[in-house]
Image (tube, rainbow, N blue to C red; front, side, top):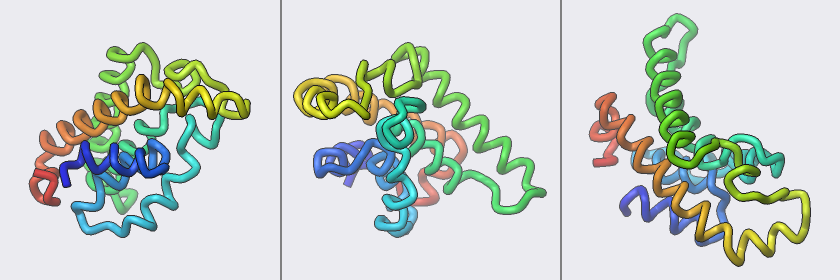
Length: 155
């Protein structure tokens, strides 16, 4: 399945934005879906409903780290590669949407029970689905530029 559609399908099933983006970007590399979703679970709604970093960005950052990051402290190249990829993604997202913060993007306080209704009625489709698509596409662009996307089956 196309990573964009995979992410939206997971989001439509009830997974949060971080879970949806991370699994869409990493399952082609043979990663365990359940493990990825558990890793990403607390990053939804701007990290555990706090409204900070948008969950789709957290999911993309985790995916980039997993696919392009380092595994030893001596791997300065891997660290800089992953940092650069995520920095470019965050900058592009912020220029496009005006913020990287969930509460600013959605206008919601996810600790408020009324926010859940507003989210389902309007915000989810109007704000989150386009942000997920944008983030997956631009994370894929970063993975392509680094020569990683084709190697792991995302092409």
